[in-house]
Length: 543
Image (cartoon, rainbow, N blue to C red; front, side, top):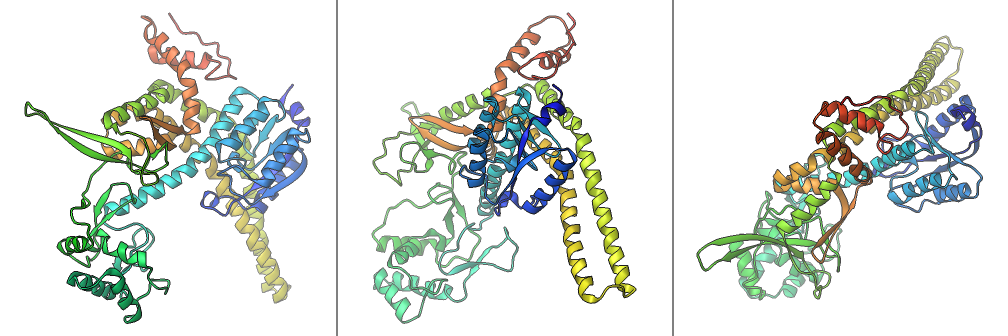
């Protein structure tokens, strides 16, 4: 049965989604999606049973309209979904998995976009899963990028989050460059509190009462300072120039803000508070702090260095990762040495490692697939460009009619408002259609680059590079009983599922004494039903 005959038997739900969150900032509005999909469905004579719009994030399961659509597909009302882009139906692994499951059971025959059709075949399901996983990867990477940006700000000496009492962020600087400056309303009052504390004649509650009732000190929300806050202020190293970020990570930085007291004064206050001898913060660079949580109690994993002095005079240095026990002081988890933790990460990276030859071949196949769909995409672009040009001509015509006084001001303004909105919509449509495929290719290339290079770069990289690789590898990092578990990114999981076949082909070709390795590898890759399910190759390696 050819695709057109098969398409005639498919009944579609048109699903349009847009979220107000960061994930969908550049995505077409729901009305724009509906209008464009309606035009395409009419031109292609698709049988549309219902149009289902939804304003909801797809980062997690639980979308009401999406779930109702799935139930209706399970009941047999429709067997196809028509969407603007695969990321409209899913940005999370649960919904993606269920869409693929519906295709596996034959209840969903097709997921169609304006530029590509995913039918119920192994290769199409793999690509659909890959594109949905890309959407999840993009979301997760945004979170990683934010954390990376905050860490970079900390490394420059600026506390990334809320400034403590007596300080504020410089609002005249652009986002990401707002350094911490003195709060003119509170800095000197907080300084006077420290001065009173240093006399040794006042307790923190007495100082708080004086600051509140006599000086009128409040927080930035104009509320009174809590009793617990005064103790936090007097024990915060930020006031003498040091800060920890993230909290509980063990990563300390030297701040560039104006210190309110000296380190010596800070030490004296700790003695007055009965905290004499408490270890002061010092800077360490650990690769994996701030990323892992304890699998038993959920607290963050921190790290510390240990020095062992042997009887023969040798000195050995070790780094251990362990639970901070900030959530449960009775947590039973023990520490793990850095080398053993790195071995586990290397083992995980080995499972997704691909040879350079497969990396190049796989990207060529993906680009070939997208090029095959470019005819439909170019057709859509051409139609959109014509519509945009027609809109511009109509605007010129309305302006001319107004100049000739054929339109009064009210009708002129009404028509121009409508045409300007249509012009903006069509311009948005052109940009989205033109850039979307390039973005897909870029995302897939990043995943394949990671699979090719990550193991080698991790083994030879500095702590910062190791941390970046681990962050790109997955999320939900848990350490329990000395074993690290990671929720591997779906894109990389798909690659991991192919590595046994890739390695088998690689070993077979490289152990052969005849032939050209690179050419023969490409031949066997193309012949593999696992790696390229739909392509029949008549090429044979020469022996």
